[in-house]
Length: 558
Image 1 (cartoon, rainbow, N blue to C red):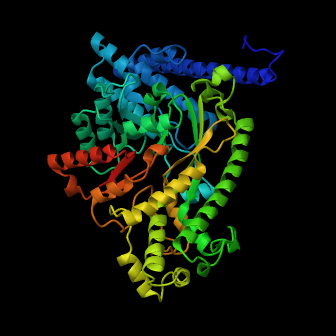
Image 2 (image 1 turned 60 degrees about the vertical axis):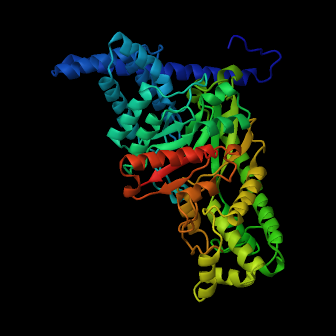
C-alpha cells in the first residue's frame, strides 16, 4: 500500500481499495482461527473423557498457530488447508471446483519432519487425513436452480485432490504421503473430495498398481491423469515450466497452474445441436423458433464439404454469441463480485492490486467446454457415408426420418446403426471426421481475448450436461433418438464402439489433447475383467499405453 503512486497512477485508488479488502480478509481468517482455539479450550475445560479432552487441547493449540502463522506440524498443515478451503468456499458460496491441489507434495515436508522426530506415525497420519476427508464430504454444495439444475442435479463441490505426478524439480513426485492418500481413498470411499492420481513416466508401478486396485473396486475413484500431458498443455498455453510442474487438474478434468491462474469454465457448448440447427436451416424444434443462421435446406448441400462448411459457419455464429455473453458476465464478476481472500492466495493479485475476478492472477484463462464429440462425429460420418459416398438415401430423406424419430424409417435406421463407420473403433474414416470437428472448434475458440487480460481455450468435458443437451434435441443422424443423451466427454456414443477398449483409446488419442485444457474419457468394465493381479496389471498397462499416446485423462466405471 505504501508503494502506491496516487500522483501518476490513475488506478492507484482502486488498487488501494483492493489491497485494503485483502487485508481485512487476512484479519478475518486469523480471527476465525482464534475463535476455534477459544471454543476448543472452553470445551476441554468441561470435558470428562481424557482422550477427547486431550484432542480438544491439541485443536486449541493448532488453531492458535494457524492460520495466523505458518504451520509447524503435519496436523497443523492439514488444519491450515481446511481453514483456507472453508474461507474460499464461504466467500462466494460456490458449488464448483475450488481444489486443494497437490496435497501430497505440500504435506510431505511436514510428514517427513514429524516422523523423523517421532511425533507422528503412519497410523496417526492416516487418521488425520481421514478426518480431512470427512470434513470435505460434510461440506455441502449449495442448491442449484433453473438451467443449472437441469444440466446437473448431482454436483458435488468438486474439490479435487491431485496425488503423485512429478515434483517441482522434475523428479518423481510419489512419496509416502501419496500412498497414505491412496489408503485414505480406499478406506473412506466418500463422494468428496474427488481424488485423482497423476501418472508420469517416472511413476513407480507399485503406486499405479495400488491405484488400479482401488479403481477396480468400482466406486469411481481415483481418476487417472497424464502428468506429461498436463505439463505440455500448460506450456502450450504460455505458462512457465516451474508453474506447469506445480499445476494439475481441478474440478472435473480441467488443467490449471495451481496458485497462479484464474481459470474459469464459462459454459458447455452443444456440438451436435449445431448440426441439428444447420440441417433445419436455423430452426430449433425445442423453442419453436429460428435461432440459428439460415444457410440452406438439406437439398441445397450438394456435397459433404458444403454441409461441413455450413456447420462450421453455424458453430462460429454461436461461439460469437457465447463469447459476447461471457464478456458481460465476467465484467459483472470483476466489478460486483470481488473475492479478496481468494486473491490473497493467488499469485500476482497482491502485486497488481487487482482482484482474482478482475485479472489479478498471473494467468487468466476462460474455457468453453465442447460436448458431444462422439455424437457429432458419428452423425457427420453417417451423412458422409450414406448420403454422399454410397447414396443410400438423400439428406432430405434423412432429415425427415430424424423429424419422425426414425419411426416408419426402419431401413434408414438399420443402415445407420449397422453400416456406419463409428468413432471409437480405430477407424480413420470416422476418426478423421472427429479430428476435423475438434480442430475447427478448438481453432475457433483458442486465443480469443477475454475481459480479464487473458485468452480462451477449449476443454472437452460435459460434467453431466450431455444428458440435458440430449433432452433439447430431436433425433440425430447417427440414430440417437430424440431426448436421449449425447455422448459424454470424448467417449464414443453408447453402443458405437464394438472393437474393445484399446480401439477406443486409439481413436481418442487421435485428438490433440495437448492443445486443450483437459479432456474426459470414461470406460466401463465388468468386475471380472479387472479381478486379481492380472486384472490390475492389465489395467495399469492400458493406462500407460493411453498416456504414451498423449491422452489426458481416463476414469473407470466397474
